[in-house]
Amino acid sequence: MNSLASRTHTAIGLMSGTSADGVDVALVRIALGPPPRAEVLDFRSVRYPAGLRRRVLAAAGEPGSPTPEICSLHQEIGEAFAGAAMSLLEAGQIESRSVDFIGSHGQTVRHLPEGGEGPEGPLAPSTLQIGDPAVIAERTGCTVISDFRARDVAAGGMGAPLT
Image (cartoon, rainbow, N blue to C red):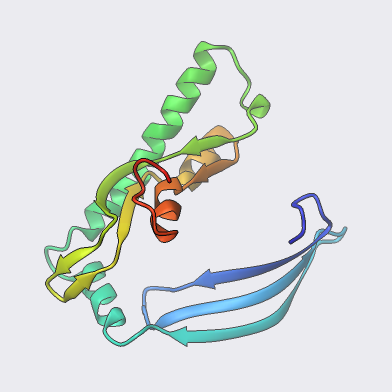
């Protein structure tokens, strides 16, 4: 693993679009330059497991689905968190460029560290915090670190307290 100060980085990019047919994954080498360059070393599309695509599409577009509201709240809460950070900085007359990073837990909307039962079968151990860290970063000009609880649950912890 290279330090972020390194001039060349190897990275993996992951993406799934609204078709929800699977995950596109690319292995790339990025040279910071000058000039900056990116080289795709490998790429593939990996299909979602059976049933997952149907569930994603239902959650995303089913009439009465709460997904549009959650999507909007993700943005709005990000704005509120950014506003809170800026309020603190302004009150203390602190320049945002003097802040090394912002740690954002986000707003917990569901916490299922032990999973559960859903209408389609077992629910995975999971947790969902909203409040888009990209919005916080954009509004404050600071690096934002987030998803602490989700990482703890992914590692087999309960997510609260962090283990």
